[in-house]
Length: 190
Image 1 (cartoon, helix red, strand yellow):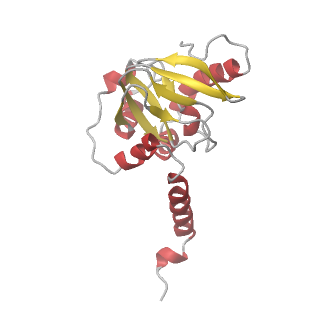
Image 2 (tube, helix red, strand yellow):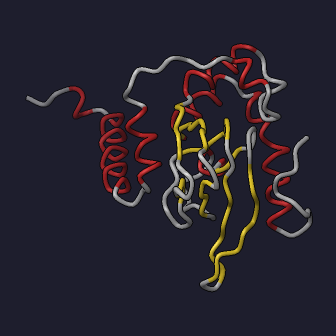
Image 3 (cartoon, rainbow, N blue to C red):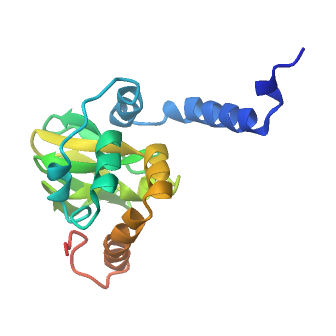
């Protein structure tokens, strides 16, 4: 007898997602695998007051902030540690709580420094929206604490809190304009 779970299209989707996750987990840097692992550990929600300090979140309502706070996983990185690597599959974004990181891009075999980011800055945000490889490498310049948010958690939050997407649009637009060379700095804040 076939289980109802095996006959549903949902189970096929879940199985395909699980297989894809297993296949891609070997290509993820340790730090991104740690976001996956940390998702299974019970966590204490962070203060929404902390999130409100960041330009990405300052205009969001309390319910939206609580949803993000509940999805975030705090991680610590040592000086020189690679947080993400250009070309790797991305699973989420990071919000820097303390410390500094550098954003590097490999261009014709040379690493070009694109930006230095610090508290309140976000990186890896494109992975929240698509499943393309990382466009840059991010490395800690000093001991750094960051909050990681996984793509699948974030997408669920967007469905129930669409105002978050509206808050992200100006930031993503600035990043695109910088990439096109029409802005001097990708780290422009509102």
